Image 1 (cartoon, rainbow over the protein chains, first blue to last red):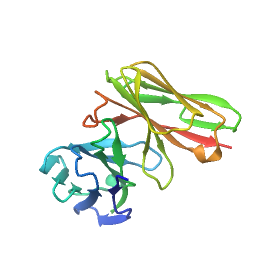
Image 2: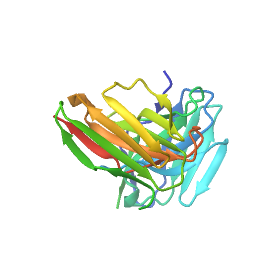
Image 3: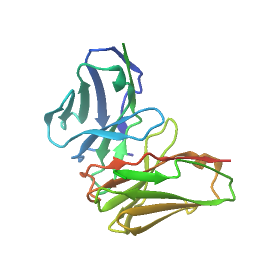
Image 4: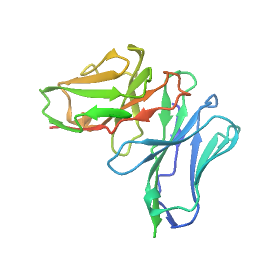
Length: 112
Length: 114
């Protein structure tokens, strides 16, 4: 059973701090990795995709990928109360061409 | 309309009812998906369509019946559902069905089965 593991949280950080969200996955053949943000009662919103080892930055968000360690993370700099949401990690199932495997998500709370 | 739209946004139905969920994407994508999101569980992929052909069916009970009449529209027909089918049903689309393609979600239909 292929799995994506995330700490459910809640992860609490003060406004302006760096929030670090982590994800590990079991499928060694995975090549595509995605982070989604989901506000309570809303649908997931894609915020980052990463395919190569290393860092990828987009505004206040940085995704980090280490395929050897089967680890992907999301850093949110200068955290704002509006960043309070559940963050979902998704990883492709390399044996099923269409499928993404989602984690249960980490809930982030940013206090002002 | 932009992005991915879904109707209805909320649906309450009895176990003997028949209803349909509708999804429309305005992104020019070729692949569409149905997901189920239940409380405390990860998103579960139900069906994948690529260019109107079903390419994946993840052992979903036959009381869920998908239909994809063209690359912009996707339906999920529901009949004789069970209370445990109550969940948020999400439609998504992507450029193609390969899993490296970014998937974009609609707002979802919150389904309650009485």
